[in-house]
Length: 255
Ligand code: NI
Image (tube, rainbow, N blue to C red):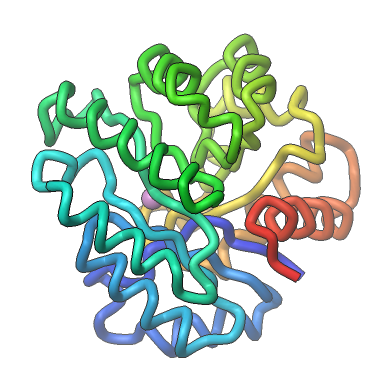
C-alpha cells in the first residue's frame, strides 16, 4: 500500500505508454495516485484519468507557470470540474519565482483566487512553492487558507518554516529530491516533521529518485522515497507506507 500524492500522467512524456505505466505502478503496490493539474487542458485530462482508473484521484487548478493565461471564466470552469466525484483538491496552485514564467503579480492574483475557490468548494489545496516561501505563506494567511488546509508538495522550505506551515493546517509532501546527495535540508525536515503530517509523492515525470535519476519518473518509484524516510526515521518501510497513505486519505477525504 503506497499513495503517490502528486503525479502528472497527463504530461506528454506519457503519451506512448500512459495506461500501461499507471497499471504497472498499481501492480507494484501503489494503490492510490493523485493526478495534479497544471493548466485547464490538464484539468480535463485529469478528470478522464480519474474515470478510467478506480485508484486514481485528481486535483484541478492552474500552476503558477500558466497564471498569466487565466481569466474569470477559468475559475467558473474549474468550479464545474471540481464537482466531479473523484476530484478531491484544488491544485497545483502557488508561486514559482525560480522560473517566473508568469509575472509575479499575476501569480499572486490567481493563487489567491484559486484559494478562495477551494474555500467555496471546501476542498484542500495543493501548493507549489518554488523560491517564494514568504509570499506563499503571506497569501495563505491573508486568504485564510487554513480553513481548508492542504499540502505543500515537494516541500523545499526549512525546518524553521515548517512550524508556520503546520500551524496553518498544512501537511508537507516529499519526493525524489529527498534521495539526492545534496538533500541535507530535506533530510532535516523529514527528521523533524510529525509523522501524521507527512505525505509522499513522485511529481512524475519529473524529479526521479536515485538511483534512477535522469530517467523518466513514474509512481512505482515512490517506494524509494518511502524507503529513504524509513531509513531517516529509523522505522519500518511498512509503517511509512501505511502512515503516509492514511494521511493522504484523510487529507483528501478518501474512504
Ligand atoms: Ni507538480
